[in-house]
Image 1 (cartoon, one colour):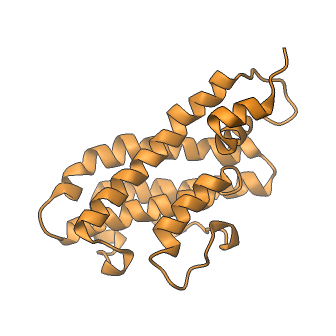
Image 2 (image 1 turned 180 degrees about the vertical axis):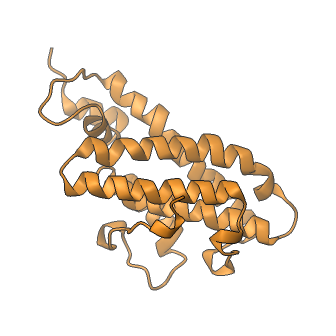
Length: 198
């Protein structure tokens, strides 16, 4: 049976279709394919990332937080902040190696795992920090940490999910940093901060 790719794109979008093709197995090898499997990308990855982004934007807007508000140095942030930033920069290393070696599975699957941990471990265990009254250093640290994670993820998914990546980047970076380029596709590739990998 042949599946018309345009039918799948019409239902799930080009980003989800492309992401499924990159994460389901190495190029050139046989794989199962159906519109339902592409839909799983939406449920398991796209919506998880979007909901995490939406959580951040909602509370940052309520509090009027921007990256210009600053935050304590990473070394002074709570252990969960340091953990997720360590994971983030390790993923940057892995994804960069994947793209440099034309290994699309290695360049995409680790991002899925990171986003799952970001949503299900970091955000869930830190909600109270975002909901706290006022703007303490602890709350600034939470915002700065989540902002960095989402901004870097936008760069990491850009080659495989260009539309979602650009939406995230424009809202998180370009709109708040007047020196930033207008699109993630014009930005320099992110570099890992090895000092944060612990």
